[in-house]
Length: 288
Ligand SMILES: [Zn+2]
Image (cartoon, rainbow, N blue to C red; front, side):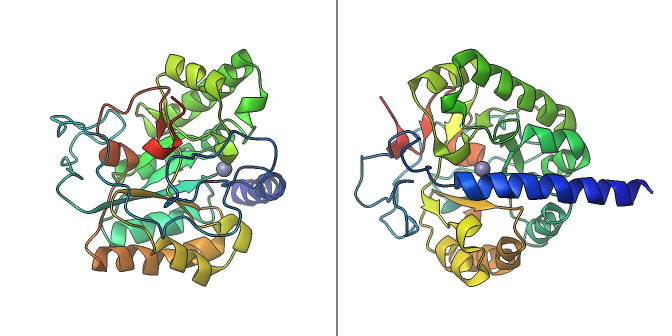
């Protein structure tokens, strides 16, 4: 049966990717191998902070000073109402390394239940296997974005290699969602000026995070819940929708943030439609 073959293949792919992520420390900067963490604010632990989530710092302040968008970003469903995060208290939940046919649908169900939106940084290799999940995410009003083809550390590749990798992933993701993507997140948060130039050529803004839940490391529902609920206004929260303990935290995370008055938005909604290609966000990650 196709289903059984698919499940088996999924498990194998999941294992390989999970193993790779375990080694590479997805969501954190691998020691000694990656770009320097942001140094602009002591209140925001960057990716170099190895043990504590960074959501307990002071608010990041206003997002990019973009005018309210008159049209939704291109990766958003056109019927979606514009959100102004200069007026609303927003938080952007982000989920990396999927899609997973086991766990991603569970998360989509929870997002739908709470009418919340989020951003999914996808591996092109998985997006090509599960294009229907790309479409579902997009149709739900959430955002899909590029997280490389197969979680390679892009800053270790040549400029041409990184460009080929990202382009391949973009094509797979866009084919699945039927939309245009404008954001990427480098695996491990590892970037450099060369990758900045590459992403600028490709029309992709680089999205990092404010709050690192380290869910991939703890695989602990309570810890993930606690970290995510530490988010402040207009911050970006990093999680991974391929881990069941993370999924198990989401009902409480989403309802808890909404109870605090936060509107859960996509990253493009948080930044505004003019998120600049080749530029790192949040601003504390800027290299210029
Ligand atoms: Zn990742």
